[in-house]
Amino acid sequence: MEDVSYKLISRIGKTNLIPISVTEIETAEIRSAKKYLTHGQYCAIWQPLICLHILDEYNVDLITYVDADIMFFYDPEVLFEELNNCSASVVSHNYTPAFDNTPIAGKFCVQFNAFRNNMKSREVLNYWKACCFKYSKWMPSNYPGQLSLDYWPELFEGVRVIQHSGAGVAPWNIQKFKVTNDDGKILVNGYPIVFYHFHEYAWDSNGHPFLSRYPLSAAAVELIYQPYTSVLREIQEWVKSIDNTFYCKKVVQIQNLRERFVSYFLCLVSRCYREILRQKLKKLRST
Image 1 (cartoon, rainbow, N blue to C red):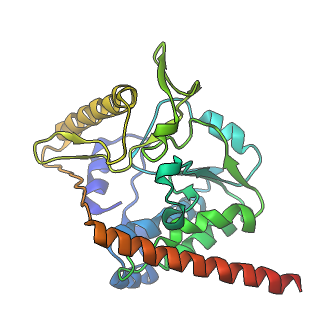
Image 2: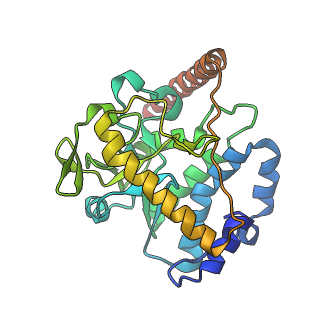
């Protein structure tokens, strides 16, 4: 993590929290990559890198990458049970058809990805790492790391596609679910939400939460977003009690329609070209 967060986590003093500073493990290869990456892309390359580092240095049996804008509503053990003896897991975007962004963001989402400490998972992680180093600040809307997940189940043995309906509920798919409260347990179409991905969530200049540009039902706002906002406010106050100078603000930048269309079109052409090449390679291998 960057220096401000590293110092804050260190001050908390929890034995089950082990802060890892970027400067401790940043290699010459990573420092060199900064020249052609945006800040967001630089953060993205750390997704596989931190997983590999922890598997190597701490010798854990299993590590799970979890996005920072996720909140669990139910015990994730059900997802590890579904992983079973497999080596890695992926969770689908599960788009509502009206918001299908597969050509740009892929079928699967980097959000909750488990990796066992074995050779099969390391093959996946090294492939993911290689794809992440293809990010470029000159193509800010191209996501090679994210798109690489689409090929994991095809290229590698032991990759489990998580099927639980409550995994990966998000603004881009919440429209296909009926959200209900069963005695404190939040359900989507009768299944407990394991975790919700709060993509786009931010605060405006007046301190009011910005929920999403996607349409949300009143039930989703009440049962999913309001609890999340309350938890964030509580954490904010707790952090300030440890360090009253700590400040973090996420701002949503909305591109104009022309920029978004051009970006979408270029990425669609790039993805179609890659798919054509992939099909040709398959034919060559089979001959």
